[in-house]
Image (cartoon, rainbow, N blue to C red; front, side, top):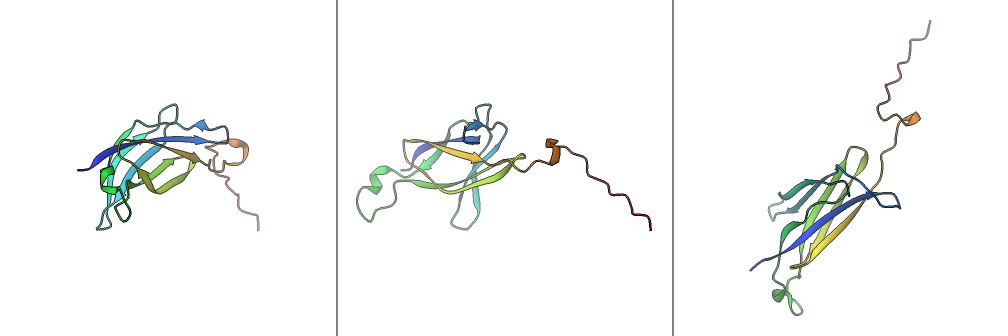
Length: 129
């Protein structure tokens, strides 16, 4: 009988690990037919974290011994925020009865010159001929 483990995502930026709030977090897995099954879509809070998501994991007793199935389930993770590069993770391991925390370092997108995120486009006037 399948058991569950949980997954918490923590998004941050820079070496100081500053939290990134408002990032969209999608947890999914790939089915045998190639389709994706989505388990959770959340937004990170002011501390850069998500609420725990309960995910299926195999019964640990079924993996006791060589040649037995792995004692974990694999999941995929996508974290996106409009000010950062997309972060994707494959084969995240979730173990039964264990709360897993996945740290996600986000890299800021380049800013327009002058630091204005909403800088107006430069209009080039026609050259006199």
